[in-house]
Length: 95
Image (tube, rainbow, N blue to C red; front, side):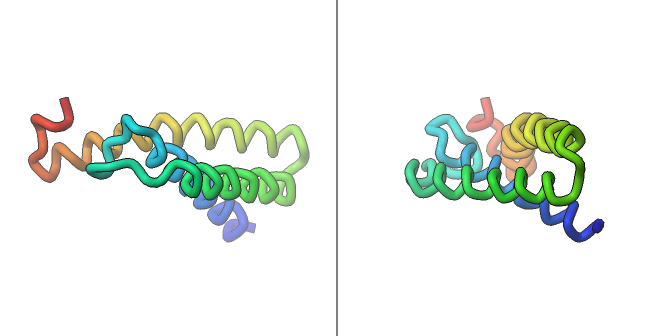
């Protein structure tokens, strides 16, 4: 069961990351990823994570876990990008 939960969280994290990298305002790289493939991949990974949540939990718990993971990762990914830039020394670009 813990392997399934880690797989679910990894799928949700990667789905959020793909959707973030498709944004023109992303800070992980110099240019955003191509929009259509990144969004399709992100939505597919999020669907896989939602399906895994339903397989691992009851419906109510699955919805709660999935929504909580979405909130966490959609908030965490941009901050990690800025932190990564600050550690590399791109402080002027982070502003």
